[in-house]
Image: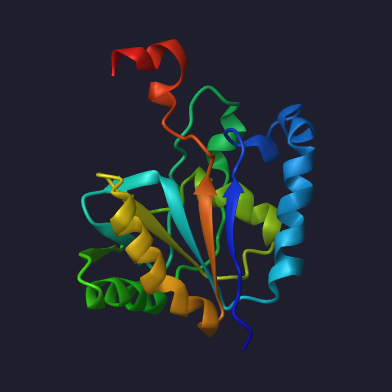
Length: 185
């Protein structure tokens, strides 16, 4: 099998695919997201590193039927009913945690973690049929660059096993520190 690429994607603002006006404004993003499956082949699973999920240690979603986390506010009521029924991949989550542990990086599994909008917004554009299993990965709360780089190196072998690795966020994601409001930090 050919080594799959790694993608860093902007998931866009809020639940844009389900909000008139927002979807049209994100047309370029939607077109780019639709190209990723064509450019990546047919992955066996997707590992999504989440900008929205910070934990003390790297943590992987490992439930068999992930719920949803509607982690946004102020949008139309129907957007809080959005579901993305892609299966989780508990075996992949356990393997990924083991790869980190072999490098001396603490990692754990979370069987209760649902999909947040960093997953359920871009992936339905990429795989509308929700046919590809998905595992989410947290970032570490301390945001230590060396630890995150080491984690990426440890997980690289997954790409040779048909797992597409996706970083989901924006180039800047700490909105609490954006603009004048961030000066207090």
